[in-house]
Image (tube, rainbow, N blue to C red; front, side, top):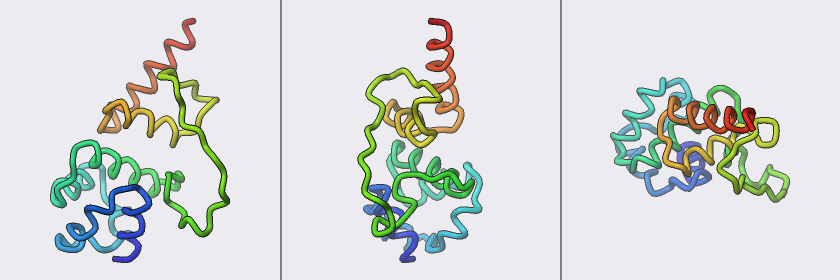
Length: 130
């Protein structure tokens, strides 16, 4: 449970930690094996808001795939470095990380993988055509 609680806290989702425990989702290794559909069911079972559910699902899928996301490394092990989030709605793939693109898409209300892929593709194609 400590790993689940720490992970939720690092993603600013700690308000759901008790609900995860109450619903039996206390094993981070198990959560990493779940499909997107199952992660959405977990999010619903613990009462997550839609934006939080999208963030949780995307971040869990990312860490399961080995893609670093905010908070995936304990703060004590992270080297302090300021990272500016993209300020433009245009995403240039070679100028930002996948994590930054995902965060920007989530901030724009994308809650599923398909929404995020479409969001990134639209911005990439508009930049290429300019």
